[in-house]
Amino acid sequence: MRSLSFLSFLAAVFFLSACGGNDNKFTVVGQIEGLPEQEVFLEEFKVNEIVVVDSTRARKGKFELSASIVEPGLYRLRFQKNQFVLLSLDKGTTRVTANWDMLEQYNVSGSPASTSLKMFLTSVREHMRDFNTMSIVIDSMELRSNDSMLTVARSDLQNMNFQFTRYIEQYADTTKYLPNALFAVGMLNPAVEKEFLTVFQASLPKRFPNSVFAREFSEKLNQMLGNPAPPVAGIQVGNTAPEISLASPEGKTVTLSSMKGKYVLVDFWASWCGPCRGENPNVVAAFNKYKEKNFTILGVSLDHKKDKWLEAIKKDSLTWTHI
Image (tube, rainbow, N blue to C red; front, side, top):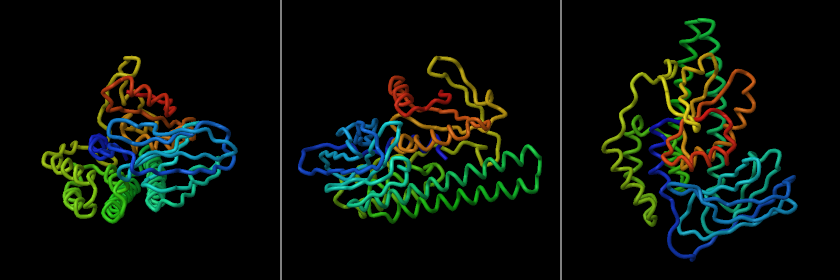
């Protein structure tokens, strides 16, 4: 699940802003069956924002986009209805095929990094579905006060998260693709996973010796790990969530406790957080699926610029409560 530490960490993780000349280019060719005629955007994740690097109009489901590239980076295709395809791109031609009604099951060729990233994202989504299902079961047990079964279920949930964290670490440690590795470690809490991140940081210059980004990121991560944010006491699976009280976009104070009695997903995010924005379509889908079943979301933003925050809420169609 997303956390304050995770989002703070992402500010350093996505130091993949392009700079320099136009020596290298890449192209993305798409064929989406059933895609209505519309504008398709190719966007790059940078340190503080998501930037449109090319756009075109899709006709009969076909489109082609291109841009200059200095080093491999993280990109996404953005369609209408806040539909996205996340890509890890380098120079060359990448082909994306899919059915518009099942865009999440897209196929990608010509980009081994994007193929690897898709497999990783599939695992992430499966884990989140399992985690959310187990959380709902635990909430139901709490209402029935079944202490023995509740203890077992909480233990299972903790083990599920432990195993998933190990999976993230293994992927970050073994992938050949720098953007993928940084995307993966961005899901970790540096205050909890300091030992792994210290080893990971030291390995980056050796794993990616020709990458300026790897060297700069390694230095930033080393500085951060020297004084990581301490874990927040008492925040564990099964414990009562601490109070959150912040202002909404309209200036009204909203508290987490005001949502007592509902299933609440507390979503820490920011307009500049690449993985958060990349996962927002899935969060929107979950909200629309369960909002009539006593489920809601409280979006807690780390943005400092209100205009960027409000723009991201509108652009990603995040219709729940925000503070």
